[in-house]
Image (cartoon, rainbow, N blue to C red; front, side):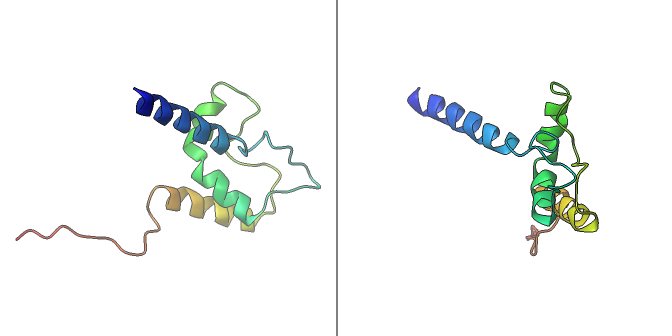
Length: 96
């Protein structure tokens, strides 16, 4: 019972950490724009942001105040890499 409780609390803690830097709620402005690495982060947490956006209108899927192509590249890499699309090696199942 203690391990299940610890697992649930750990997952809730990780979810809170993931949502701490969601697009739209972290105080970005025209003077403080999101860059490449923030784009990667926002791409990784895009599924969580999509669900969270249903409950909080401040949360966005994509940061409006960004540095242009660098953020876009990072965002794309985060979305694709977050779902396993940028794997450098893939294992194939061999049928013997």
